[in-house]
Length: 357
Image 1 (cartoon, rainbow, N blue to C red):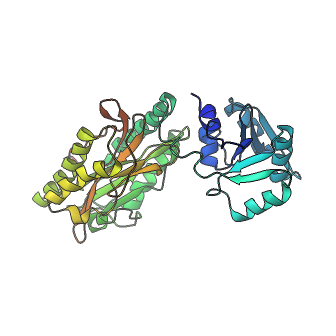
Image 2 (cartoon, rainbow, N blue to C red; image 1 turned 45 degrees about the vertical axis):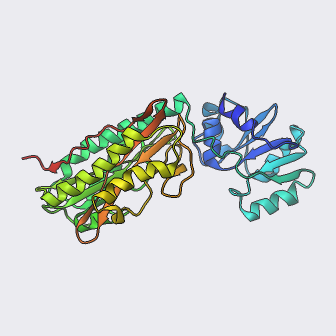
Image 3 (cartoon, helix red, strand yellow; image 1 turned 90 degrees about the vertical axis):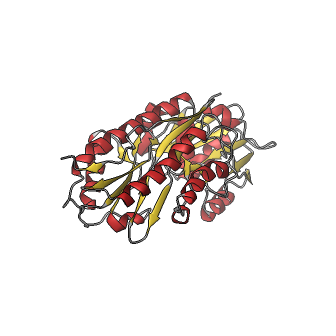
């Protein structure tokens, strides 16, 4: 079933059409990668709407429905109304969670001949199950993240600033024709106890943990990988801390399967860290859905009721962050298959002590 057929099945009963406005959903539905576009979906027809900045791009990328574009001084709302009338739409569903109150009021005023109905969750769950094509694109983004990790290892040495490593990560992806999925996290020493710390001018020192969290954005899909290494010399405490986090992550990869809930998956890692007296230092959830957004639909956490299904793609990223000492996070991206999960990221998880001399 195509994405268009999937969303067409979500048009509420008694409503003629669904207007898709949220750009991530628009991209998932149509393949469009620009920043301005909408889709009108009826039970028998569909149209892609954009402005003149994207006419050529839309015609190249959107194949599931015809493309209609407008230019100044025509307004977006007027052009959408014109297309709704041509399609014979008398009632229209909108998702109130992704439209501003001002936009909703404007539509009600301008589209007085069309009944507008709120339709929350038309896309709920649809983006969670990935097609073979989506998984292939995610794998490509993951392969690029693995290559980036190998590339930046040469920078792990005393005297190099966290910020320099973060900048090199961004440059690497751009040189490969990709974007960054999010601003890279590079934190070292005691600062590695900040799960989402911002790279600083702090220079790496012998005995520092260095946690690097980054991802590529490629062909509309994202990767998200985290690795932690040690500069110069690793103490017994470094090794024990790292081994506990790695044990928790590997256990999830071995035990996670379809039918479990997000809370059950999270508990696998959390119980192991608690056994090693590190549970209180694991304050975030185990992972999240991954796709057209980095933090896409779905969560693995102590309170998650999300059900694991074949075709979903998740991050698995336990961590333990001890103030005054440092933190470790190890993250892989995985796809759920019939017999468990398959890793999409393959960078080594051996504790690396760098530089190698």
